[in-house]
Image 1 (cartoon, rainbow, N blue to C red):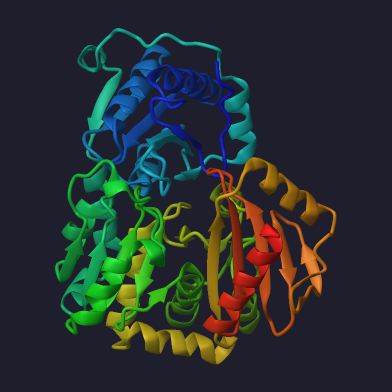
Image 2: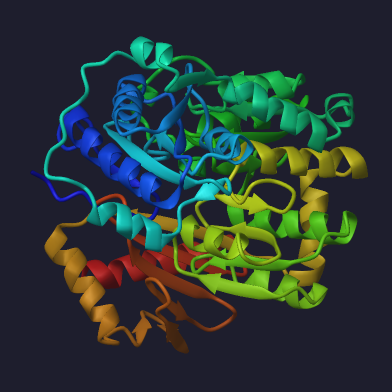
Length: 466
């Protein structure tokens, strides 16, 4: 028996090694027991993305939940994580389950747990579910068709529900008739169908069935999106690019020159649009690894600002009890006011396309508006695949304040909210953190320009690896 633990966003493991139907049944049983504890009308929404065997694992989850007396609403075919979260909110279920490993490599699958407010389940409830996972639980032999006949299972069109919500919330004619043609990369993920339903003026990449993602982790960062970048560079009709991860809750973008626009810039643009142009207010809540420029923009607009641990469940915990304008992560997961408290790469992309359409400005021009307030900056990240021994040594060194400098960069102060952020000179910083879902060490850096950021990352890597 393996000890199943949820990471920053769900339980993830390698398919057929730890992520098996038997282990999924165990987690589903604990989920059902938790739902039965918190609700007198226990119900759950279940969906899966495009990963290998997603339908099988969703079926196992549905069978266990039906067996335990829950009313089950299940999506037919792949859906995005935001669709499940929104469906849980609309259908007023106690929880939602998404079979997905998000941006992880194709060998992984996962089990994300959502709550009835339409976002990630808070850490306290996740811990309760973990504590209730049994050593074994048999997969029911009753078929989904039989559960459907008994009235315990209902097939739902989560994509249509989401599409209707989008149509009510955005000026789609303004976007689609603006002349802004975009390059869209679904990364073989769950955004591929809905994006093409919503946006009519696109050149699409990787919008077909490939459960192995052609061997590449579906994470919307520049090194995974070079084909999209080149497409925009060499096709002058394309004004920007949009990409989503495997379950479409994360976003990456490109300007009209094919330059990557990271999540830090997207967060700043969204705050700028929602507050200055749309008149929205509320607190901004960001994860520890997000740019310091967000604080400067919030101070400029007199918006409250809070930093949380890494993991959107911490941000969501704030969004369900406070008036929050935006919650965002470095990894491209961003939620905004006017939608459920859930990261949504499609939704945030639509906001920025609407921003461009309404103002007639390019993404670069809108970024310049933000820079006029915050100053320019460049962010990048290295993922270091290390032995467990070396990774542990580095983390211990961070805890023990061993690193007082990296090469010529002197540490001015260190913060350890979640990981270790070392503030350097000239408004620069570097952060070291062990991944919560993969066997690697992440090193993040920000400085006023690309050359300096790359120098910081190279210097830190040299120091860490000795």
